[in-house]
Image: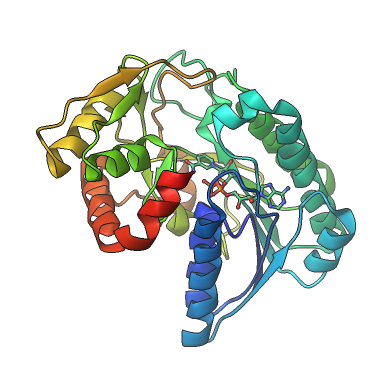
Length: 328
Ligand SMILES: NC(=O)c1ccc[n+]([C@@H]2O[C@H](COP(=O)([O-])OP(=O)(O)OC[C@H]3O[C@@H](n4cnc5c(N)ncnc54)[C@H](O)[C@@H]3O)[C@@H](O)[C@H]2O)c1
């Protein structure tokens, strides 16, 4: 299959591209190489997928460009069977600082992808959505019928895109699926996220720094589970037109997470608290029964287990990864 991964130089897109190449598919990625964090991490992601293509029957092509560029997108999508749409300005805080960019990249860029997909009869568009579409919890865990009240421009943009995905399915018959990822972590993860921050600080003998009072809770999803959920949709059409939570169904408060990391790396460190950040959700917790029912999704790791694996990976890759995380 010829697969397009948008945002393919990013954390999740990089893993998806690599895994599809490993499964002997032909992969094209498009990414604007936004310097939201150290570009060395994105270059590494591209190199890994490119290297996999030399070891397998798959192929890999990287195109630098924007999903908002209609001509470019039209040209790329012409030969594509299925699109995994990951390109977005990620990050709640970045969206609070620059909401206009979020609308341009996340909403307009997605619509450009949908138009090209419709024109060229793509088999399916799988859209990376987010738990940020829920915003204020009325009850937990969130199921997909929970009300949507995003509390950041980022969450609003992801919700708008979900609606476009559903509408293109209903109005034009284009098969689309939105996956609401719950905070994703694992090897090569983005800097400036709780887990990468805590691990990186503790490794350097610094106290983990918690934003706010640490009572916020999160459902963290291991990257391998995100990859598996996306792979199921290569051939399975049972979720077309649907939106599903993809989380771990486990959750943890941020102070406990900081303690887990600290105890694993250096139990002598204290936990430090600093100001809460605008736009951060108070709690996230996924009810994953819809994804289990539709595509057989089963998360493979509880948070403590996954964090332990990430710490091991960090130790093995510290030499190249740490400078990129610290400089971001
Ligand atoms: N990481 C998470 O915890 C998480 C949680 C929920 C949803 N998501 C969603 O998953 C997707 C991937 O997130 P990630 O963590 O890999 O982020 P990331 O920032 O590592 O990757 C996103 C990539 O998209 C690229 N990009 C942004 N705008 C673009 C545009 N207009 N054209 C082309 N490329 C563009 C960026 O350069 C970047 O490389 C995003 O859609 C994000 O909203 C991520």
